[in-house]
Length: 405
Image (cartoon, rainbow, N blue to C red; front, side):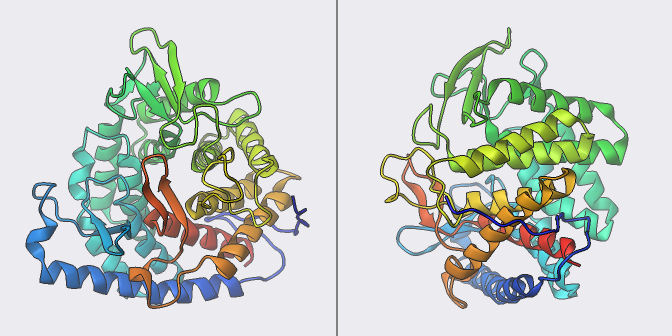
């Protein structure tokens, strides 16, 4: 694997550090993102205006207005607020507002965020954290809108309803495929919503649920080398582990790239929120494992699974790379001597994404990045843009910028 020369600066979204000024790549990407996201908004509005009836079918009265990806036939895949990825598009618009200060982006972010309001009561999914924290959470952070605060708190209350104290985790999927109480590594990403609500309310229940979930996941999801299983199935009464499986990875014993990224990001965020050293240690171990996988490419844009059988002839997953980069920038501010190394890895990811994975301006319905993988075993969203790849790309750029001020 290509060795990385560390630079002397760490990064985070809401913190800064002294060091070399290197903001050109941030400016370049946000300028491109502005053009692309304006195209995305125009495309969505044109579709809604031209074919409103088609946007209601299949999901009741939930209109399909959020860009998610591009279908195999080349058409734009629009989803409703009930989809787990619905919060990412408004979240990207909030990041545009954060970077530019342009009220155009604030207005559009508010418009698309409002369409998610009903999801604060959605008891059928653990992904309410993705839906609400990325949209209303960013909106409240940037505007202080009290109505947004209320939505965040209610969403957190709804999410805690999926917590089982016997297991110590929040239920991911309702029982299926022979699983009794499946918990996926992705669920670490919904804990920020609970921690956000704990700060806003002083209600320690949100805090305790998040910590219990993180501790139980740390105990049961990770192998001795800090690679992660995708799905852990529990006995809902005893809390005993019944199965260790995958759903989106190559095999039960393989290392699904985005799963590794979710783990890195989740424990980095939990250390930021709690200050518990065990979470920092976990995040650092995951980061080291990601970087030392034998099949990690030199450009640090991983294959969809680190153990996929046909590497190097396997699809890359840009979404995993953007999540890793964003987490590494933040982790670099929370650790000691390892910070410059994590920053250097994140910089290399961003530089290579910018050089080789950007969608050409005016194409791909306004998506920013190409070559992500959603669920390859199900032949779903393979080698296509994904809205969450774009969201974490913009977040990573903001974290980089705040380092290099």
